[in-house]
Length: 623
Figure 1 (cartoon, rainbow, N blue to C red):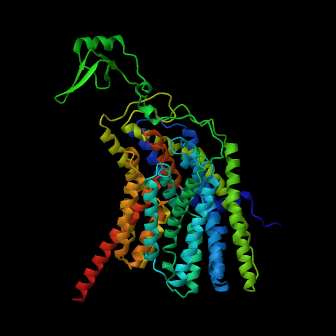
Figure 2 (figure 1 turned 45 degrees about the vertical axis):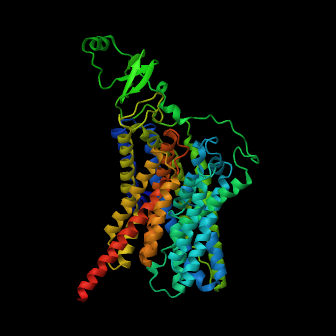
Figure 3 (figure 1 turned 60 degrees about the vertical axis):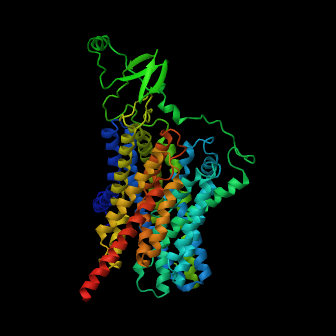
């Protein structure tokens, strides 16, 4: 008699495990999704567009992350950890470095956020930012490749650091100084300046759920071979380098194309000159875009009787002579027009429940192709490397059935994740980003066919509301990141309880919140990104110089936990949405960069306070 369990029995056994893993993913995304939706519904008072697509997309994202993370656990991580443990013992340094370089490139291609970066150029107007447009469209493959090369070089340098016990300070100080010099040069060039946000955001995109575990496994293996007994501290620093080098790589690529003059509109441009309809953001504040309701006869008679204009009406003057006399505006021979702006009906969901322009079947096919191209080559590279290393060590490669299941889950999970991003997270982030400026300027709400006036009469107050929104978005989303809990526990162990887990989590969350708030400030007031990046990084150079090595290690790596698979696409889509709606702004890049620098500053500052407090307590005990 066969003892094979029935399908229902297998489902009963597996269901608690699947439910737990699914709920883990829901816990990591529920806050940021709920926060964005509630802010639009109750603060901006605008309905959600494509709510059906968004709900379906978010559910698909949760399932995708469940399969993807399980696939990493069963497939990629065992391969990476085994190679990290065996390779440094059985190969020369040059072979380890070559593997590290190729691993960095392969892991970058497999990052889910890279797929989002590929599609970020759709809203860039070529006339406003020609080099940025070409980087995201004509040179998109080169962009992803140089980001991967940057990560590969960072992993190589991290391995050398572990081999020779270099201080992370002496890698950060010259590296960041070089980046600031290149940033200052680009800021003073009108063609290069729009690329700065893209370059600095690329540093946040690379440190995701694939790259970080793989490079940490290799780093821990190297440290074990080098005889470092404290492997819990082994991985610190390599994530920082993997964030900085892609920035340098993208900046150098942009400098190269600028010198070659082969970007859009330049003399050596060989791409297709596309007829792109120029959309002027300045037109969004035009009075013609604001819809008005007809004033009834009864309202007209009440005005004749009382002479009082209700608060929800708008008064303006047409033609005539206007003068500023003794601080008062004098209007002569002008027609006074009283209008009643359209007030959107309070409804939670717009009539467009599904995005008809997106075919789910075609979108899934494209997502599956993207997943296969990203995951399969990386798995083949890891498998071949492991086979080669074991052969050199005189051992045989034992392939378990879990490995194949893990690879299959990884491909399926990434395909579902990218599909969910397309259906749900991108529309949610884009429409909220496009609608946030309604707090301080007139615009056509995302997905609507008529304009609306600003929610607040004071432009300053409206921008302050948008900035506060950015802070709580960053603060709440960071606390929901699972990687932050792991980092907090590790730091508390390393510092023997001096830097507690809760303190680290609050420091990082506040830093990210402040960073995104400054990012919204940048877009709202159209402030050049360099002005907001150079001062905090100069401060970081000083803090890095005076901080201890252990605080520098996990302080700089704390930025890596802010760039989870959910946060990156949502913040990126939201930033581009805000940038596309604010008059005079060419793009919305830079939010991720500012969200990354904030936690480094707060962690290092709190670290200095913790160190000083610990020394005072030690002195008191010794007395």
